Image (cartoon, rainbow, N blue to C red; front, top):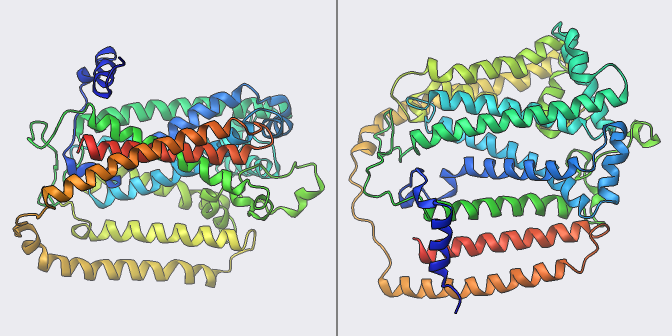
Length: 479
């Protein structure tokens, strides 16, 4: 007779000593996406490492563009690997953006998490640079333009002496060999920063609910809190659900866009595949777009300023501001409306970033007149600072009532209703598992070269269904 589900879990835990891992558990209320945004970014990072290592088997710096296209058209499952690697970067960058904003608005950069925040900022900068290098490695017309922009930036800040180090001696082989080498080096640095960031996050613990912390730093979840249950298996199982959910989305989006009925209609900014070769006639028809996450910098190059000023305003100054935030804002206030100046500054900067990105996508390469620059820059500044200051005054008037409010007793559903829900979830889990197995078996009948989008959708459905199964199990067994 085979082992029961419980005994399999016990065997797994004992074999890998999972119960001995000194990771900290969390209260039940923290098992929500709000507290696991960093986990989504981490899952995307692992996907990038996995798919990147597999594509290393086929990528040839001596013939970058043709080897990239060969991965799509000649390597089994190659189109799935390449398109999901691209969208894995997109999802990771978006998740880091949202995670960073969430951390700021909760005041989680304050004591004792100052260096944890700094590591996160540095890691984000490394991710952006790594994505730029990876985007350039395809050898398509957009990658070639990106390399030219990189060389121009180095020249604008009087660092042309570094051009051979980053972009080689001028030959195609040396260029793409350098790009491949730098991509691997930067990914390694990102992983090392992530490991240290994760270590500090584990030591500092999750941020408790702000009301629970009375909106005051340091906000630390005590390790002896009676609400905290062991890390194994609750945190582990929930993280598996987050990982498979993230991977399913990473596979689903480019697979939909790569369907034959859709792929030719997708704007090149979001295409799951590289653009045309720089030597092809179609290259002249493609605007020199950067990746979407650099569109704001692309539009800044159209401003009536020297390129060095654009780079300083768009990258260097924001990076420095983000790094020094924990050391400037050293008071104990956690609510964003108790930090009105920085909150307004963050909202203004985010608004500018979105405005310039949309502007860059809509009017690529169109010079910006000073009057239009003022109309785009000044209103968000006035609205953000004025609005946040008014909200700050309102918050100060109601804050004492919010902090001292009695939460009262929280009503719960009856035990009968809970039992019905549990039985329904148990049955649903069996159905989801059966559907996932059917999809997996059907995917094996598809051609691994020509049916890439359908395979990607099949695997995406499999991962999403498995994620649903994991969350059902979490709800049914580990709540």
